[in-house]
Image (cartoon, rainbow over all chains, first blue to last red; front, side, top):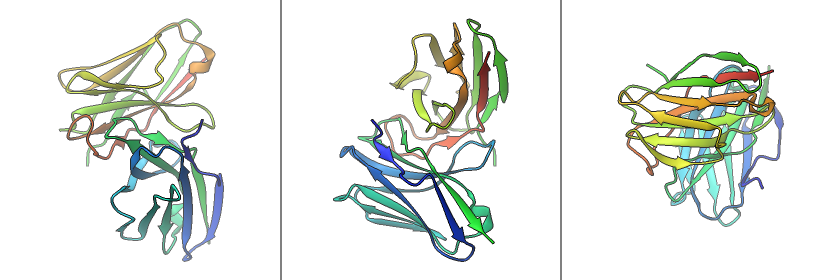
Length: 112
Length: 115
């Protein structure tokens, strides 16, 4: 059973516009959430994280929003740039566990 | 900046053979994690080590074993390989110890193909 769900396998966004990647989770014990970006032939690269005590975290062009009641988080990238084209994994961790549970990823295409 | 190093990057083995994957964490990182990503799948946690001790265990088959050495590098040993073991194996490292919220930094992965 997938505990972290990314229901959109792919997303295309015009360069300069906002990219919104969505993620839902089912485990109410998750209290730390992360986004990773992955280029082909490379490992996932940490982007941004948020703990459950916050509902927003911002780092440059990247903002993550957390809605605990809906068990939903989203990653906003604005403005989108060509180098943002990659697969984005949503991930979560529970009770300070070591392991990160990943979603299946969303492939983001930034169109010129 | 130094990143996580994994070797080899590619490995081809036959069924029932053994394989050893190596992971060298970022300097001063004391925690190592192993993940397996099958074709079209999300990365699945296998096992982690903190200060040379196993700290957490996920969906690692009994045919696999791993350890962390005094220099903090880790090795994943895989025996009696099966076709289903073909996957990308990622190692990640973090600083600050087991059970803490420290970001994990991933290596480029080792692609294992079992024929």
